[in-house]
Structures are given as structure tokens and as C-alpha cells.
Length: 173
Image (cartoon, rainbow, N blue to C red; front, side, top):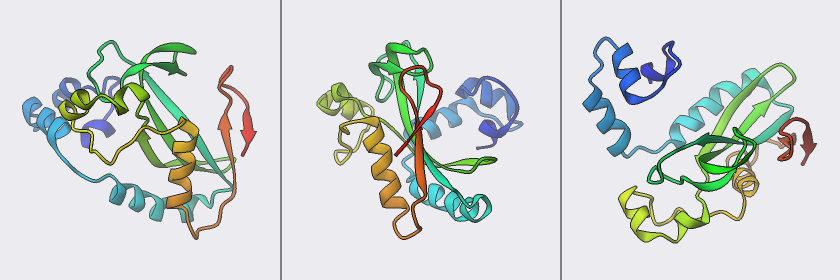
């Protein structure tokens, strides 16, 4: 976590290890690629700490795309890439944020699993995608499902999401 929080543009394993005083590139690589840890407790703790501070008036469901050259990184496929504004080889994470006019905090995030990955048992095995992870019908439904499950009982302010065309304005949900 320190490597991600430190200054520096590049957040690759090599760059982060170089910035850390005890940075061992091989150990960091192994931790990132082979550790099995559940992100849910981390996400819940963030929500517990941030929701009272933010007091959200909206939930924002968004997708974050990262263009990729390789094809074996988890969930990389030719799909709409918001970062480029066109269809390209990329990885997409769906995020759910608590938001106000002055603050925002991501509370849920997960990779969107494209259709090509959902049915490819070899790629799933190589990249250790658990069998219970299935392809979602859409990025927005993935985020909406996460929001409903995680925020059950907390009250539901109105939500907004970025328009796919142009990537500016918002639309009520």
C-alpha cells in the first residue's frame, strides 16, 4: 500500500519497489500476483469511515478503463475504452462512489469480466479467476448490483453516471 500512496507517476511493481526503502521487487511481484486476499473487508472499512464524513447525496457508478497492449492480464479484451473514447484493448473496473457536491470516495470496485473471458476456461485457470465469478450483462448492472448489496439498509440517495458518448454530463438513475 505504501508504494501506491507515495509520490510518483508510475505505479508499476518495478517503480514502486524502487521508491520503497525496503522495496524488494520480487517479493512485491509475488504479493501482487499470487496473494489471495478478500477486498471486501477493506472496502467495508473504507465505507464505515467515509460515509459519516461524506454524508452522500448521490451514488455514482462509473467505469475506469486502462488501455493494455497484452492480452493475458485479467479481463483484458477489445471493448469500449473510456480513456481513449473508442473501442480498444483494455481492462475495465466498475466503481461505486459516495458523492456530494464537494467530496467523493470509491466504496466498491471490481474488474468487469468481458464475455470472452467468462467462457475461456484456460485463461480463467491461468489468471486464477474463481469459478463463481461470472460475466455481467453490462458494466452498469455490475455497479448497480454492488451498490444494492453493499448499501442495503443504509438508505439510497439518487445516483448519477457518466454518459458513454462524450464522457461529460450525468444522467439520473
